[in-house]
Length: 174
Image (tube, rainbow, N blue to C red):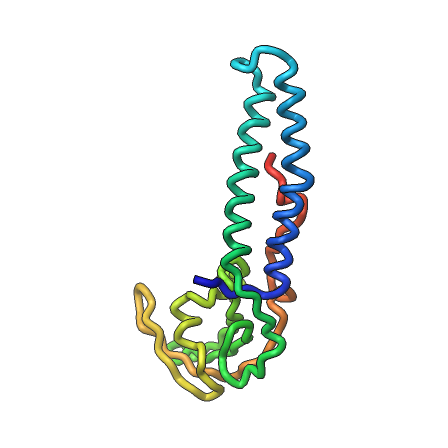
């Protein structure tokens, strides 16, 4: 199954993949060689640490490669957003509490539910997709059935709203 992702989200995946493959893995492999040259490997903490780091890097590379292959890159700026779709910024009225809430529909790897960036696969996003302004909808959540009304649909770049964007420093394994 293809996973929708924004252009920026995909670029971040590729950036991390290239960094790990071209910079971090060769560096750690060299650390392992230097540690191995120190002698007895059975009690060599540096050797075992480098070996463990390589294992983590390989697992992460496998995961990133899998996610890149599954990705369906979508440019939400090209959509009209007359109806809720991937990349839509949706202001809703919670009918039960009479409070306004803002949600942005994004990919799984881009989601930050605590900041309103919700995965396209979440129950709330699934209930909103295809709806228009003034439409009311219900969504069944684990503890309750909630009712909403769509007040506004627009496009805002997902990455201008994200709070937790991984940097190159966070790509490494300590």
